[in-house]
Image: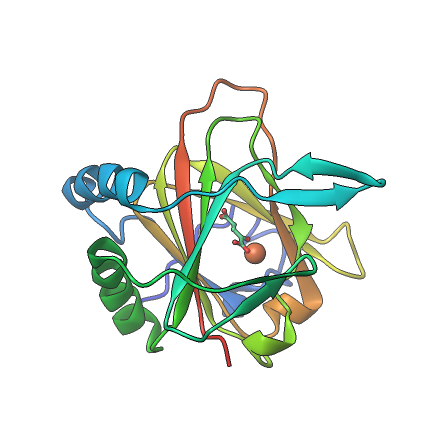
Length: 202
Ligand SMILES: O=C(O)CCC(=O)C(=O)O
Ligand SMILES: [Fe+2]
């Protein structure tokens, strides 16, 4: 795919992992986004999952859903998730993403960030079922949010990109092994954002 990288610190930092991330700002057109966002809101079965933290059961700061091929179970935070069957919208998005990434994805994790208070903490998608050096394709709709990447060992090594409405970010190489990523909270009044990360579960 055509490589466009819009990382602000590109020039200052030769160690920027451009070989680990491809970003396309307008992968889906505005018209496609306007059709897909309400369809995803209405047709996806959004769940409020919990997390165990400091001995307490807390709500995750976002809603989630897991869709994919039958049998592609996903283990996350000590729980196992069976996928919901693909919807028409998801298959449409997947066909475009599969083509761009050159990968036939078999599952997708969806996140709904309701406002600036919703977030995703630092993590790497390095579960064994994703395999070594997984390609993960991340599609964003709605409110643009900052996506931060930092090196696991040298935590000062940090980059960020604004994930815009209709954008595609492909994460690849050893990004999930050497780096972590997050979507931080914001104190601004932010609208809803839907993110889909397409994955191959082995
Ligand atoms: O919402 C995002 O942009 C990131 C989502 C993510 O990192 C994940 O689902 O693993
Ligand atoms: Fe992730």
